[in-house]
Amino acid sequence: MKIAFFDSGVGGLTVLSTAMKEIQNAEFIYFDDSKNVPYGTKSKERVKELVMDAVDLIASLDVDALVIACNTATSIAVNSIREKYTFPVIGMEPAVKPAVEKCGQKQVLVTATPLTLIEEKFQNLVSRIDQGNVVNLLALPELVVFAENFMFDDETVLPYLKEKLNPFNLDNFGTIVLGCTHFPFFREHFRKVIPEHVRIIDGNEGTVRHLKNILRDKITERSVRTEVTFYSGGVQQTDNLRYQKYLDLLSSI
Ligand code: DGL
Image (cartoon, rainbow, N blue to C red; front, side):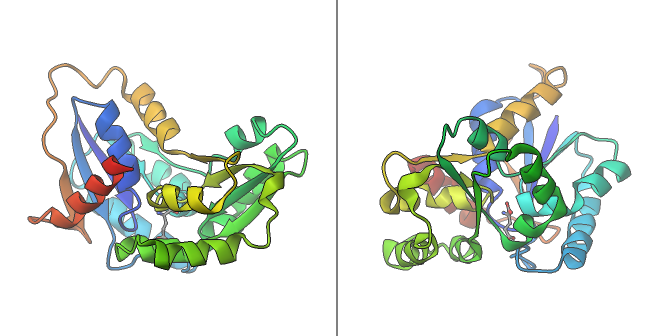
């Protein structure tokens, strides 16, 4: 059983690391497009082209399932990918539904890339779910750049977050949704600048649960976990140190 995870860059590692805890007997492939990251500030047409090219390469690796571990790529291309391939494709979208269902009277702040937030798929999701008008949107593209450059120091991240969150009276908010897979790297940074009562949620656990359900019959005792194989821009990586650094960081937060 071979499961591929795809993201523009290192964000999908936050999903992969959740999957590694939950699924023992499968072979994982991590596939990024580091030459073209970030996707979230590019045009829809360009991102679609990049994602379809990457998925063609992933399909040639004979995978049993593909997780599009990227909200931006999902919103642009998941339907086209499903039309083209027969293996199961698990997409991701900002966890607006659970946030709104549990918000009580409080406001919800959905953070994501600019492209995810303006996409029709996301706009439709919000208008379906947000009957009480509680959803607020905030694009945080610099977090993707910080993560790609392994810039996790407070001096860099906190002033950016404070400035971006400044227009919102967070006392009135119940939940912040991390709607980009790069953002869970910054969970602790968010915690430092938001009131204690505000919950932070992402879609990673829900996605892995969904993946497990879909593959229930296929993940057999006979398939054995091997090391993760990493591909960057279509090329298999022999040195995994860069990825390991991020996975180590994730297991420490
Ligand atoms: N990690 C991606 C997401 O979940 C996008 C980051 C980017 O390439 O801009 O949206």
